[in-house]
Amino acid sequence: MGIVANILKRLALSGGAFAALAGAAVAQGGDVVKAPIELLQAGIFCPIEATGQEAAPGTERGFIDLIEGDVTPDFQSAIVPGELDMGFGIRYKLEEGAGSANVLVTTIHPPFGTPPVEREEWVNTVYDDATSLSLFRFDDAYEIQLGEWTMELRLDGELLLRQTFFVIPPEDSLIRLEKCAGPAITS
Image 1 (cartoon, helix red, strand yellow):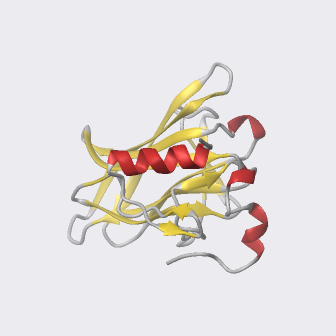
Image 2 (cartoon, one colour):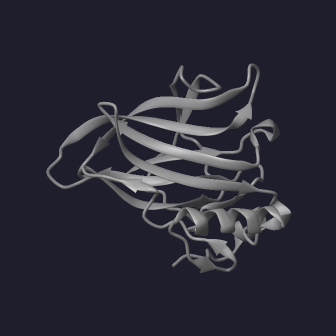
Image 3 (cartoon, one colour):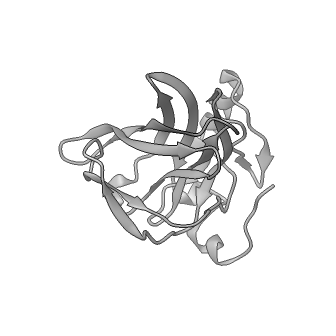
């Protein structure tokens, strides 16, 4: 059985929410979403230019890239092609009236780097009147690791959001870097 079939079978058996869209599973609702966090969207992002960097010692590189603007996923899918410059992640905010809070963002993935890293963490300030974006972009070939990738948000140690993605070989995906030049497939 191919990797895509195994992933879809696992999603079906685990009760993960998915729907067919051009043969890919659509990221809907997250694996876990609890107040006061609202998951707005999850999916795949075409290449995005960073506008700056911020120190993040809990990450493999020691920093995170900053992206300005209200960026939205180009493809709403939890099945991600492992291809340079492609990204995937989540858009979220606090529910109305919650003000602001510092959340711990965690990305859990297959090991890469020297020494191998499987967990990356940083703190993000989230607001009730603005969206936040946490994404992972494949900047270097060694980062492209096939398998399960999970993004989590925690507030005071409590898990508020978890979204699982599955990175597959690009040749097994209907979503490819070259599709970024054309219209997005979203619902």
